[in-house]
Amino acid sequence: MATASTEIDVGGRSVRVSNPDRVVYPATGSTPEATKLDVVSYYASVGEGITRALLHRPTTLERWPKGVYEGVKQATRTDPHGDAFYQKRIPKGAPPYVETARIAFPSGRFADEVCPTEPAVPAWAAQIGTITFHPWPVRRDDVDHPDELRIDLDPQAGTDFADAVRVAGEARRLLDELGYRGFPKTSGNRGVHIYVRIEPRWTFTDVRHAAIAFGRELERRLPGEVTTKWWKEERGEAIFVDYNQNARDRTIASAYSLRPLPGAPVSTPVTWEELPDVDPRAFNLRSVPDRVARLGDLHAEIDDVAHSLEPLLAMYERDQQQGETDMPYPPDYPKMPGEPMRVQPSRARKPATS
Image (cartoon, rainbow, N blue to C red; front, side, top):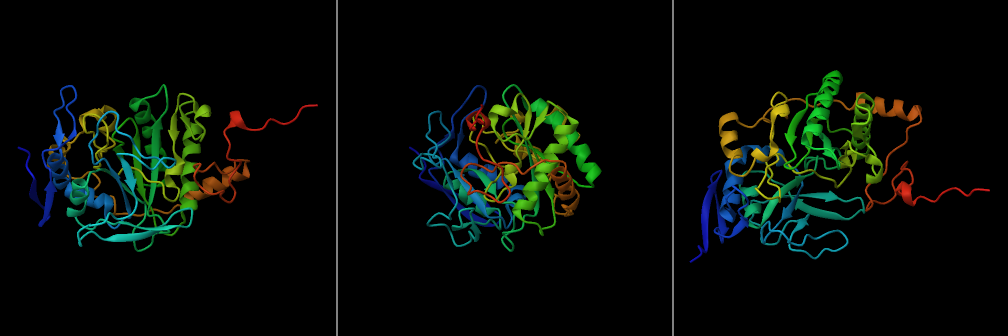
């Protein structure tokens, strides 16, 4: 008979887990199944790291309350009805220790999002079916000025994790030249993420421009291997630097977040030195707690220094003077100032010929 509920201690707070035996990740290959209690216990075991990644940040919850099964329907912007969905507003019935932060979307609408302040919060969120945490790059005391530049190296068709790692190596050299300290992690899938703490005095638009400048410089250094092209039909077999992950209301899976993929992979902090030899599939719900117990949180020093964006913004201005323009925003955004025509090249109206 299934266990109705149990309780676990998370940072000195009792978190109730209902239906702890329910399977969230089915067994796959040599990887055993993982239950809801396994998921909640995982987040409790990496409490220090996940709390550092989410602390005082408005956080969207990616919820899979029926588990990560093949065929589960995911809600989308055009079809909000699904078994898995993104929750931007605090769920009803949240315990009193779950705090919130009010944020504004590009549309001008507002929402009160979960704002983690202690390890029990991600454990509670896991109890209600949250698999992945998507924090904003801001703190709740100033939600209009990001304190983090996010470099998302996304493999396109024909490329893989090894290609992203090679580009990350060049990104590290560029960061060193800029005087920035970057903190890498696996995406939990095929990509690499690099976080840079910045002074919270620039707008989302500024930070996005800085990401564009960084990506364009990588394109120049690794021609044919890196792209900042927004339209997939133009990217080719290259690593896409997704600059729009720095736009308002765009988020990346946090460090220590599980991903809704077979084998329960984890977006895992790594050192620059180990990155070339990493197998991202080896970082999962069962292996990462042991890794953290041995190595600690490899992002423990991420808040020790905050950098200026001025060098990258100067690069963006230089590119503009040489004829570069702003880049397209995601399709759900209102038309933004300075943005070029937002239409994929194959559908653009061709000039009339005589």
